[in-house]
Length: 252
Image (cartoon, rainbow, N blue to C red; front, side):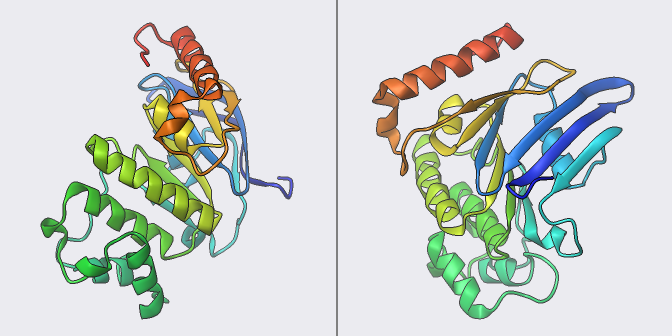
């Protein structure tokens, strides 16, 4: 793996019970990039995240990340779609004690992260007392408190209402630019992908071969106003055309 690459999939094969999902897939993700994955249902988007996190192992080929050493699991964090916090811990305890193995983050760092995600005033509350948006913020706090080099997000905003989504988009952009970690995010939302990403990978129907990569060059910070730009319209059109070519049910 070259020095500028954080994540590399080389000729990766994967399948379930004889059903081939990935077929000689090659992906290079440079360090510090935010990459979204779009594609038809069942095409292996979440599977790629599980392979990167080593929750699954490829049937063939190789998956490499930037830190293949004993610290790797602490430097890579995975926020799954159905994340839920430990209900018996407060917000503070979830970030301090349940964010990973010892050594635990310092009290000062926990306070800093909770302040950044807007939960410091909620630190003594339990998850059941939080809104859906607050629980998503808590999930991000638990990931970011470990200063990960790589962050994996599996449809992190799919269950949120529109207003809460926009709050989370603004928060995530700010935190990721400040932390400079590499991000791979699975989403079904084209607008979300364009707003947050440096690159969009469009997967085909399975078995997936090497996906089509679309670069997003819009300046940051990005707000809802980007939807009015001709550059945004061109990127969206390209994404939609690639999705349509892969699935008759794909919609904007």
